[in-house]
Length: 287
Image 1 (cartoon, rainbow, N blue to C red):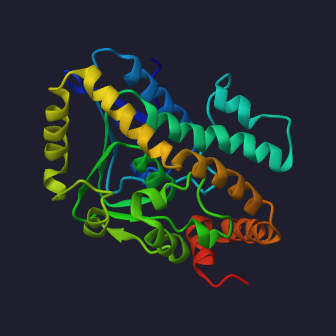
Image 2 (cartoon, one colour):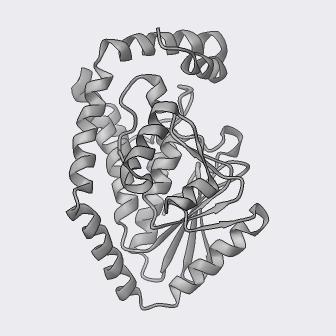
């Protein structure tokens, strides 16, 4: 296992590994380097026979602000699969689909499908790509000040690479979340079944560890097969087909004239005042 730059990988006690996004100065914004390291960390934990539970966390005040929109993040290292996808000679929609299929969609699916149970330990803001990855975990423990939001429709493309929202929050609440960009409180996320436990921020680590210990007491094969069966039940209900379909809808929206105009406005805003100016443009009325 190589040394990570964006991720902390630690065995917190026998049988329990914690994978922590470690970019608190950027509110754990996920650049390509972080996403590549995150997938590698989950693979490492999945193939380690001594690991029984994986905790997924974010360092600092917030869990994650989502994908890095600043344009100043780091690429994955040379030679990695992600870098080879990023450097593809394809152009236009074909290149975007190829990159996002691997960088976002398949990376999220791998997190969902690891054989070990996973727990997202969420504090503060859990937004956009951060929320997408948290949704791939089997369980979510949240601090009472956590907020769950996805304002990406306000950037004009048809939202996320993985449309998990209807399955995790309900179909009408998913529309409200995505059309308004308004976040859900920890209590609201608990009420719809996305969060399984709410605790104070001071107790977040302790209560997450207690839950991980209880799960780790079980027979590993029984836990893994139970996870596989429940995930299959979701897929049998059409979840995976809906996700596959939305990835194509997402690419169609990228190719729209509205999306092209937004990318131009976003670039101007970033040049003018960085991410804050870009967010100001995002939150204004679309012209």
